[in-house]
Amino acid sequence: MLFKSILLSSAILAFSAVEVAAHAAINPALGVQGTAVRNDVERPSNNKPCGNADLTAIDTSTAVTADASGSFTVDVENFNGGKDGSRQVTMQVDAAGTGANFVAGQVTANGQAAPAATGTEQVTASLPAGTTCTGGASGNLCLASFKTAAGFGNCVVVQQGAGGGAAAGAANNGNAATGNTGTAAGNTNGKGTANAKNNGQNAATGNTGAATGNANGKGKGQNNAQNAAAGNTGAATGQGNTNGKNNGNGKNNRRAAGTRLARYVVVDRD
Figure 1 (cartoon, rainbow, N blue to C red):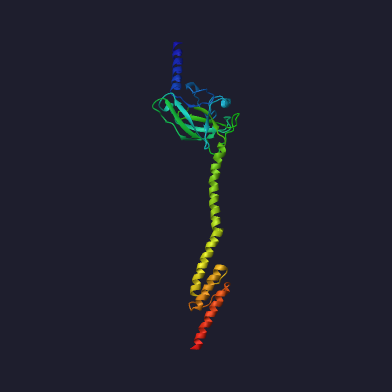
Figure 2 (cartoon, rainbow, N blue to C red):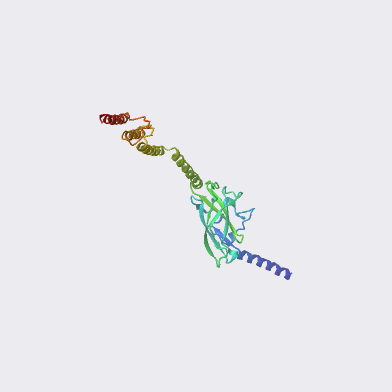
């Protein structure tokens, strides 16, 4: 009988030692008023991501607030040092707040894997992209399940600020809109009136050069008509071959013809 009592006592002590040596809590904890103590720590599992915590306490528990990007901060407190008191965590989120459907979230600033002593460390996490919290009576609460590297942890209530989910979605849509803007700019360059004007000016310049040399410009419009006329003027002074076909500025053409006539009159007088 004495032997059995010794064995039972040893088992209890061993179990207690494990309980003492492997605890860390994430605050504010679901269903806990104030700061969690050792006995409030759960063992989250795949079947019970919040452990044995009362899921209906979502409306009465202290919540942390996620910003517009979905980021929020919690406090991880370990009750012993080393790996058993790890403050390094993973996180998953149930957007409906019922504890039935958790998806992986992201921890952006983690705690120490094996702290040398007890203490509290801030950990920053982020809701999955596009998450809209719909839990609780307010309709804007999520449940976040935290689990340390030693297998301990608990759930935390996360409150999403007004427009939080919409803001995350808008950020993604904004990137797509930027791409569309670039495309629109490309189309504008291809079909823009401004480019047409530039091309008209360049063509006019080309016509001017042709007018100076061979006077071959076929003028269409005011600028080209003037350039073709300039070509005719050059031809009249002997600088062109007078092949220009002009659609405008008939006055210049008549002046050119008059110049040629004057030249022939001088030859006849000699």
